[in-house]
Length: 154
DNA sequence: CGTTTGACTACGC
DNA sequence: CGCGTAGCCAAAC
Image (cartoon, rainbow, N blue to C red; front, side, top):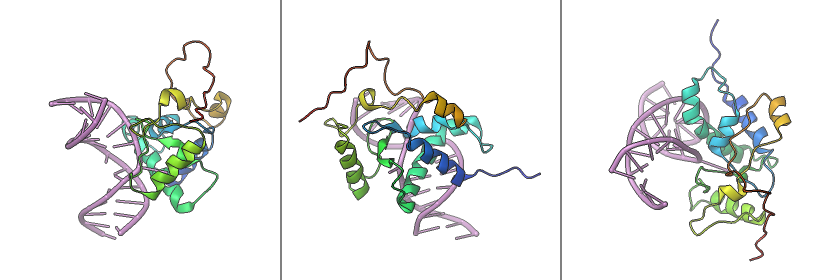
């Protein structure tokens, strides 16, 4: 029996489904999303850990081709909280505009504070129902209570 | 069909 | 901390 080769299309679908769970005003990282998906497709776990994030990036890139408006691709950023598209690209501007529209703020280095806007993952029940893993929280353990979201009006 | 490129990251300077 | 690099796979050329 021939070993099944990776299924990029299926992988992309899974990625997109996860991205659809990201709430407004929050962001997830490529690596975080990759970590939620089991290293299927016969790919070595070690390899997946190292390069899964890149495939997630590929999945996001694919969105631009299919133009699926149900996928909030703009809520996916890199591990530094920055936009990974080329700064001069139109996509980067659009992504930043959409995030700002959701009240996500950028610092002077054009980076998002993941501790403030980072996603902590979908509902555990949803995760389990889809055979996925809970992602690592992007936020440091909140001091006490959830600090009320401060909307900077300017 | 061989090359090049990249919407990533961890790590070393 | 910022910057450069290695590592690896699919797609796009």
